Structures are given as C-alpha cells and as structure tokens.
Amino acid sequence: MEPAGPEMRRLVELAVDRIVAHIESLPSQPSADVEGGVELARSLSEPLPETPTPYAQLLDLLFERAVPKSFNTAGPGYLAYIPGGGLFHTAVADLIADSVNRYVGVWAAAPALVQLEANVGRWFCDVVGYPAGALGLLISGGSLANFTAVVTARRERLPEDFLRGVLYASDQVHHSVQKAAMLAGFPSQNVRAVASDARFRLDLEALRSAIAADRAAGRTPFLVVGNAGTTNTGAVDDLAALADLAGAERLWLHVDAAYGGFFLLTERGRRIMRGIDRADSVSLDPHKGLFLPYGTGALVVRDGGALRRAHGMHADYLPALPQESDLIDFSEVSPELSRPFRGLRVWLPLKMLGLTAFRRALDEKLDLAAWAADELRKTPGIEVVAEPELSLLAFRLRRPGLDGPGLDALNRRFLERVNARRRVYLTGTVAHGRFLCRICVLSFRTHLDRMRAAVEDIRAAVAEENPR
Image 1 (tube, one colour):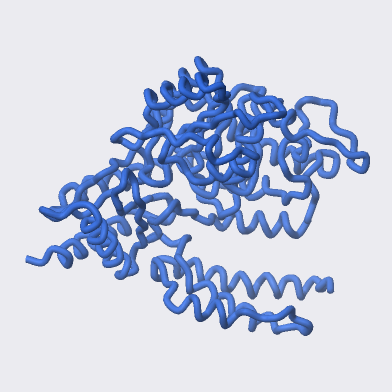
Image 2 (image 1 turned 120 degrees about the vertical axis):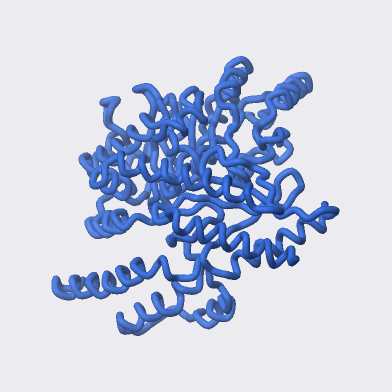
C-alpha cells in the first residue's frame, strides 16, 4: 500500500501537471458552469470499489468532468457570495502537512508544530488589536467560529441552567449565528433579530429597547453579535458604540468579521472597524480575506482563559497538560481532539509572501469595489442601494412605475442576463424586503480588467431589459 519513492514522485508530478494547467486557464474558464450538473452527479454515483482504478483515469474524471461543472470560485470573475481565493502556497503546505501527518491536538505530540500554529493564532490576535492574554484558534470556518464563541460566552456569562439567556443580533447577521445558538442549546425564541437601519447596520436604540424588555420579563441578556461586513450588503456595524453598549449592559460582545476582518490590515479597514479590539471575541476567515483555500477559519478571544474554561477537559489516556501558560493544547481550547495541522496552511504563505503583499491586495479590492460603485452610479437605470464600506456592494435595476414583486422579478431576470455572459458571476440577496444584486471583490486574481468586464456586462444587461 505504501508507494515507493519513484511512485510517490509520479503521483505528485502527474497531479501537478493537471493543477498547473487548471490554474493557468482560470481567467479563460466560465465564471460558472453547472448546466447538466444534476445528470453528471447522478452518473457518478457508485458502489464501494473493490478493485483499483488507473490513476490517470481518475485524474481525467476530476479535471475533465467533475471540476469544470461548478462555480469557478478560484477565478477572477467570481464576484458572488464571498469569494475564496485558493493560494497555491497553501496547497503546498497541505501536501506537506498531510504527508508528515503529525498530530497537533496536544502540545506534547508535536511541540514545534503546535508552536507554529500558535504563532498564527497570536498574529490574528495582533491583527484585531488584542492584548497579550488573548488566544487565537484555527478552525474550519466562520460557522464553527461563531458556534465556539456562543458556547464560550454561554459558559462565561450564564449558569448551568442557561435557558433564560438571550442573544441579540442584527436582522442582517449571517445565519450561522442562529445555527450556533441552536447547537449551543438555545430555543429559537431566545435569539432576538434586532432591526437594522437604512445602511443595514444594527440599530442601537432598537437593541437597547429589546434588552430592557427582556430584563423586565425576567430573562437574562448575555450576548450581542456585531457585524464587520455582512454577507448581504457588506455593512459594518458601529462597533465602538456597540462596545460601549455591551459594556454598560454586561453583555459578551462577539463580532462576526469572517468576511471583513482582514481588512484591518489596511488603513481604511481599521478606520471603518474602529472598536473591534474591544470585542470579547471575533470570527475571522483566512479563506476569505487572506485568499486561502476553503476550510481555513479562525476565532480570536480577548481572554484566552475563557476558551480554556469553556472547553477544557482531560482524560487519563492523554499526555499531561503543559504547565507553562505560553504552551497550548488545542484540544483544551476547542471542541476538537482530532484535528489536522491547520497552522501550516496559514504560516507558510504568510512567511513566504510577507504581510505587505496581502495588505496591498486588500487595498486593491477596496479600490475596485469603489470604482465599480462609481461606474454603476453613472449607469442609467441602476441604483446603488448599499455603498461599499469594504469590498462588497449591492445594487438593483430600476424601472419607472415598477416596484415590489414586479421589480424583484425584473432584477432576478436582470441578474441572470449578467451571469449568462459567463465572464463574471454575481449573486443576489433579499435585504429589507428588496431583491438586490451583489458584487463582492475578494479574490487576489481579480483586477481592474475583470471589473471592467463586469460593468460592461451589467450595462449590456440593462440595455436588454430597457430597450429603446
């Protein structure tokens, strides 16, 4: 079963040939192509294999049939949802990490590798502006980060019988927050959806009223979630004011910065997210703002001891816990005991490229989103509904005398026309009862040429919907 050295090299070299060709062709690939995907998926259903299949045949299946029928999430035209870049440096890191296959759930098993991952967690705490006692944890993404934060806040702020505890979040918050509350044991009625203002930011007066009403009813407010870049419109809550309110009300403040957090590396991002360093915990997604492959998430907590108190549990068959406070057993600060060596997929690209390269790329994305908004404002019939605070904006096509469901239907059709050209892929959303089209610029492969193509395709779709 263990291949000999030459066979190992052959496996890697054949895969690399396909991978390099795929990456080099990304700019010319369709931005999305899932036509016939259902039929393809069903054709690939198969029983457990008993006999081997030639490796080249499997590579053909992957690169010629399976991979092309998908959203081109790694391509420059992917402006949908929240893009994940997929830096090749991380693919190399994963090959190394998976090949050496060291266990990093406890410090004693791989002290140096655990330290490299702990360095990454500390770097992320520094990005947010946290003090020395903070702790950063790498996990699979924002959903698990939000879940871990909710559990930690529950353990810190509520008694064992916690069902009178109430959580607050904007009506624009990512649905993973509601899911996190459910998985943490809270009934859905314990989660308050607080109204957002005209800029899609959490309404602080509405929050104060909700907290007061719950206290008067004998419930226990304990957690509020702020947004540093919503998925719908990219809105950033007033985090400094929210921190003031959370402090006055003795609430745990968690900030979902999965999309926007790494814009803190830029001067504009730090200004927009002023006050985030006062949050108790922050979710970050390196697979968004650091352009890494999917499955790279992070949670940073101001008081690292809170993570230990919430998740610490020992067993006789595990090595003794390190006594030094600067050494970390990841199994003691997270839900996972078995875990991959995630640290290398962040550490290696950051060390190889340096932070300046990421900062410049993020500044470019801010510039591109602002440029796109300016161009759309010049386009007759287009209304920019949500200006880009970071690199995400929302807009819609307007037609005199048309509103409500009719206008929503027009914009759904309009979005299909834009995407049908397959140079860019946009997605829509519903915010404040209106269907909106979205542009999210967050791939290191997206530059001005592709944004020009996006605006050209939008204007062509406008002309088709509003013929003279």
